[in-house]
Amino acid sequence: MKEILLDTDIGGDCDDAGALVLLKTLCSQGKIKLSAVTCCTAMEGAAETVCAILGYYGMRVPVGVMEGKDYLSDNVYNCYAKRIKEKFGAEANAEESVALMRKTLANASEKITLIGIGSQRNFARLLESEADGISPLDGRALVEEKVSELVIMSGMFLEKPIYFEGNKIVEEANVVEDIGAAQKVAQDWPTPVVYSPFELGYDVLTGRYLPEGSPARCCYDFRIGLTRSSWDLCAAFYGAAGCGELFRLGEFGTVSVDDKGKTVFKAHAGGRHRILFAKISVFDIERELEKLVL
Image 1 (cartoon, rainbow, N blue to C red):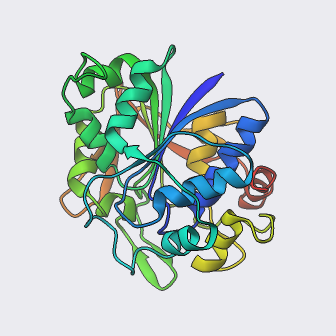
Image 2: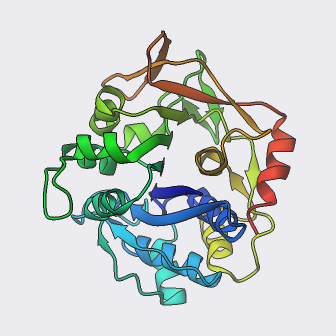
């Protein structure tokens, strides 16, 4: 059974909540094990939102929170996490995110898939982490030994910009939120990395069948309404279930990130990076994802 660790910026956009429900569904079907969820922001209520969403379905996993109080934590970015915390009153009992990552990897009997649906700050910090009481391995060595693949919702690789909600998208938000971290992961991460980009999922709308009154439904309602783009669901599906009939992987190569956050992919033999693409129509991807977001 594939073992998953999810790293999320839940509380900003609501497709994180949809991705978490999708992973819950695959867990309940016996297809994966969700070993931990770590938060890659310092916003109030993020960990409690994870616990509320999973708790609604009778599920609980270890949850990590980011150290510090200033990273993506203001009320402009925190679209719903504080409100979910106040509405549902879930208790998180969370650990520090990178420490929980190290513990989860160190204790794993087989290699784990890491899925990132936010900035890459926790992954960069994991690479930089030193040997400790959790593991005698430093972060890079621990990743090399215990991670099978990193799947990240990150980047925009089209030659022309996308116009979305009145904005010209050239650089993708998860990259821009910590460009240095995205550069470090692109340059130094030692295992295969799959990039699920902005252009995959922005026009796939999901969330319409979330249970009325559930924490996940409220995340969507507080953020935007009935449905939202499915960037994070595409990454989560691939990370947990592979391409299936929905997606395909591009050729191997290397992603680079410039100082403005623009991502460029260059194909070459021996590269560790690949881009995720749609294999079927937007409508069909939407229909298949919605079956898992209930």
